[in-house]
Length: 299
Image 1 (cartoon, one colour):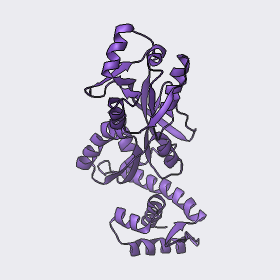
Image 2 (image 1 turned 90 degrees about the horizontal axis):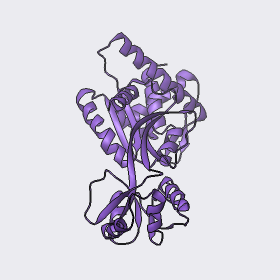
Image 3 (image 1 turned 120 degrees about the vertical axis):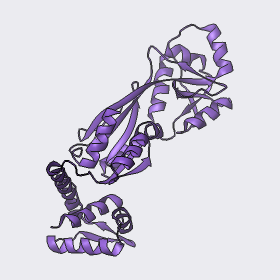
Image 4 (image 1 turned 60 degrees about the vertical axis):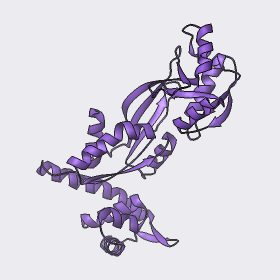
């Protein structure tokens, strides 16, 4: 089998369409179709089947695509071993939450564009559960996820994890109410902070249950059930809701200060968001992925 034809099949398993493969590899859909048809003849196996107006991989095609990733990675690794000056290449699909993309991934993208132009990165914005689901179905190569120390994430043994960074979170409230609170309490614990706002509406995350888990956990320590009236995965919108007097919600303590909002620190227990890199076990040897993982470790 020609490894080039395996590349077409593998990209089809990733991109889902002939047009996507053609765009990634800089060729035509006709060429993609011809190369995969030739691969099917070489293997004596049907690799594609109709799917509406398009095609999809048969079970045999999906199995061969799995082998193709290993084969192509091995070929790339051998080439790099023989020629230390050779460049890693390929398209890396990365999904993650917006903060990690901006803070961690964007500097790497700029560096790769300058020094490793044959490594392309496709960026998708997703909350952790969404990214992990895509990773499990091999629709991603790398996921940037997070959890809270009070709501730890659980991943399967088939996922490799690299911790990135951690940042403290607090409770965002209107500054006028925070000032009144400060006058009545000195260095309270998290439950005491929550208790002061027990009669307020609360703001959760529309796409990740971890925020709600934390809110309910600390509220239970304070002896009440929070009224989760609003949901948003945008920190800007959470702040807008707080400023409008519609509720209180969790915010990172290192977030740039916005007039009218105070972020009250939480302690006993404290609250930290923890960011991670997740990859499928056994995939990190692929040179393009290994290159990005190295940059993330060094970052």
